[in-house]
Each structure stands twice: as structure tokens, then as C-alpha cells.
Image (tube, rainbow, N blue to C red; front, side, top):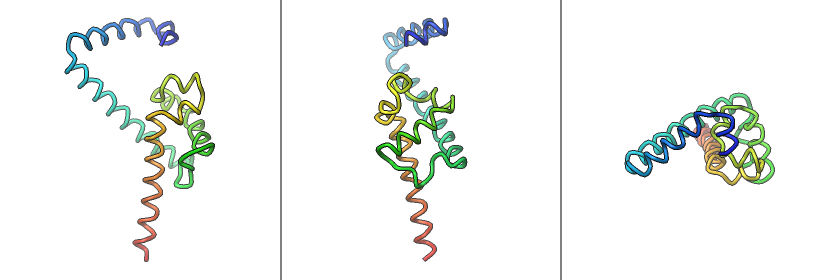
Length: 125
């Protein structure tokens, strides 16, 4: 957070506004944050769909261990994904990212790809 404040002078102003809004209007702030999270999930979904088309994330991508970390590292090369990933992931590396909410969404997406493949094979029989 300190690095971001140093890079972006408007960040400190925005952070203070958010802090004030959180204290003065907690319900409105919670709704705003819920909308921000929902928008981030939608953007992450679009990014995962694009990554799937490029072959970065496929139904063969492991959902745990080193294979998942390698896939997350490939995703981190995209600036849009880095913006959605937690700040600790940039500092602590792929291990921290693998434990984040973003990683659980990626794993859910991989499992959905696997489920769709199985269902399509079952329909073929």
C-alpha cells in the first residue's frame, strides 16, 4: 500500500475518502465494495476465458501444487491479472497467490472446464 501511495499521489486521497465513507456510511460503503468485488470477478472471468483460448488455462491444468502455481505465474504476466491479484502475490510470489481468493476462482474455472468436457462426452454416448 505504501508503494502504491508513493507511485500514485491520488491514491492517498482516494484511500482517505474510502476510510471516511466506511466510517460515515457503512451500509453504502459495503454495497460499494460488494459491487467492486463483483466487477472484479466479472473481469477475472473474461480474462480466464481469454487465457483458455490462448491455452494458458485448460481442462488439463492442475488444480493444486506446482502445476497450479505455474499456471498462475503465466497469468501474472498479464497486467490485467496483476491488477486483480492481491498485492501480497507480487511480493511473496506464486505461493501467496495460490492461497488467495483469486486462485480459488481460477481453480473453480478449471473445474468447470473439466465438468463441461465430461458432460459433453457423456452426451456423446
